[in-house]
Every structure is written in C-alpha cells, then in structure tokens.
Image 1 (cartoon, rainbow, N blue to C red):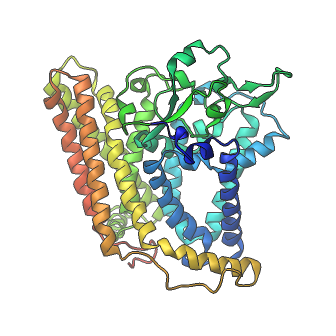
Image 2 (image 1 turned 120 degrees about the horizontal axis):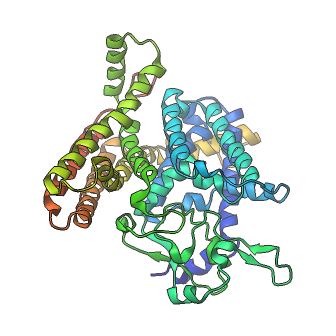
Length: 473
C-alpha cells in the first residue's frame, strides 16, 4: 500500500509545505522548552525542559519509529534553522571520506547516553536547555561548512538511533514503478529538480543523504524528508508499507550504504543500540546503585564518573564481546568450520538483536511516558505563567499524572518479550540464509543469547526505579 495515495492523508503528506509546518511547530515547542529551561524554576518535575524531553519526547520518539517510521527526523526543527541559514551561507566543503561511516555518530550516541546519566540531565532544566542549544549550534556549524546533509548522515547521535530503529518501521520510501525509473534520464530524486529557465538553480532539492530511490533498500540513512517525493517529475516515489525488519535480510548492494554485510560500523551500531537499552534502563534501578557502592568499595574508586564508565564499558564492550563471540564461535563449530571467521559471523547476526533492543527501549521509555503522560498539561500551564506572567492556559492542574506503574508493567513485559521474539525469528532467518543446510544448529547459540538477554531485561524492568543521587524510589 502506498500511504501517499490514501485519501486525506496522502495529499496532506505530499503537500509541498507539510514538512515545513511540522518543523515550525517543533521549533516553537523547542523555543518554549529552552526558554523555560533557562528562566523557569529549576525543579525538574515542574520545568518544561526536563518533563517534555525526558518523559514525552523520548517516549513519542520510539513509538513514532514503530508506528510510522523516522517521523522525528521528518519534523526536525534543526533542519528548518539550517535551511534558513543556508540562504545566507552556502557550504563549500565535502564531508571527509575517512569519516563516511557511523563511527563518529555512534561514539556520540554513547557519549550522550553516558553524560545523561552521569550529570543527571533529566534533573537539570538548565543543562537540558544548554544541550538543546548546543545541538542546534553543532548541526548549524557542520551543515554550513559541509554540503548535503552531513550532520544527519554521519554525526547526529539521535539520527543514528533513529536509523537503526527505523529498520523495523512499517513503511519505507520506494519507487512506485521501477520501469519508470529505468526510463528516467534526469535523476531528479537524487540530483534535484532544476529550473527550466535557469539550469544552475535547483527548485526542488533531491536526497541530501545520497539515497538514489531506484537503488534504495529500507530505511537506513533515510530521514523521511520526502524531498525525493517532491523532486520526482514523474510522481513515481511512494511511501509503501512493508514487512518490518525484512531489509535486514537483504544482501544486495543498496544506494548510499553498499552491502549491509560489509558494514561493520552498522553491525556495531546495532550492538550498541541493543546493549545501551539494557544499561540505560538498569542504571535507574536500585540494584544499580548498590552495584556502584560495591564497586567503589572493592576497587577503591572515589569518582562516580569512573564507576559509571566501568559499568558502561562492561555493558557495551565486555558483555557483547563475550556473548556474541561465544555464539559466533559455537555457530561456526556446529554449522560449517569453513564458514567465515567468528567476527564476520558475529557482525552478520548482530543485526538480529535490533528487535529486542527496540523492545527494551519501548518498555523503558514507554514506562516514563505512560506513568507521566498527563504531567505535560500542568507543566505547560505553569510554563505559560512563568514566561508570560499570567495564567493564559489556566492554573496548573498538578494532580494530573499518568498510569500507575503496576498497570504499565504488563505492557513493558509484553514489549520486551515481543522484541525478543522478533530477534529470535530474525536470527533464524539469517541462519537460513547463511547456512541453508545447517540452519537449526547454527541458530541455537543465537537463540540462547536472545533468551539470556530477555531474562536480563525482564529482571531489570521488574526492579524498583530510583533517582540518581538520592537513592530513593
């Protein structure tokens, strides 16, 4: 099904200014968030900066990825600011070839997740506002220096998170009719549509992330900007529904990516995405604080940063290396000793962990969203009073909260197990592709890994939450 052909929805999404309207709305929200973070009360539960980002934005981000696709990148307000600035300053440089992989972006993703916990960003409105401003500044500097969408493709940590998660989205950009693409000679979807009277002037830009629609597969690196939809002179670009995760099994070369099996950086990103979901949820529980205390005593560490760094290193490096390395070596032994080396096997099967990782992110962020979903109302009312000076939206209804944690737990459990089931199915499909004659023996180690991670995730979500630095629920 082509979403762009649906009644009402299709014409709206295809409207030339649809993305601009979404970006403008989010830019207004961002300005309010930053203003309240800087000038509002520095009490996290009563500040729009911390409530809107830590509770609502994170939860809606992952829900949007699962329900629609990379919708946040579609509406990213930073690109609206960037496009405005590019009217004044044109980028001159091309992004360095040595950095055209995901290593920088995934490193920044780890830094962001680590810093969020280390500095209690969720509890610091000013820090939250400063990070938002810094994010805008970084995006602006990079994209005013380098051509195309260099920040989105190679740097943005949120973008890398969205790219890997959107492999499980139910939609993707694809050609409506491939024969039409074969007959096309202008390639406007990637080059941009030029003015008939001024050939050097682009009136509809093509894909800034170098994804050629006829050769594109899946959602990796796609920001769902719809520029290709606007640029195609044949109206031949569709937003089609598809089987979630199927793109992870495609071994063909794809535009802008190459062969997925050759991209070690994407495999590592999948591993970081999955295991970061576990450590991100774990460090907010009471057992995590007890573990930190024991590590401090045992190792004679006095630095909280060192202790937290040790926990992150174990979760993102040691544990994945042990589990994936053992599973790959065992799979090679059980299937075909002439198979690729264990590192190659681990990289290929690492993609199977993405559904489980997304399930844990949904369970974690969904908990915060559902238990505090109504808090945005009184906080927004309070923000209007703080910034405007009078209760234009009424007095804050501080009794508005959300669902009781006990009712949210079954939802968390279901999302985690659903993600684990998806990973088990994807691991089997990869095993069938790689070892058609020894599918079952080859997949057994990976099913064990998924089962162990699922047990760990279920244990984590069952632990009482705690507030970092206070040690209380």
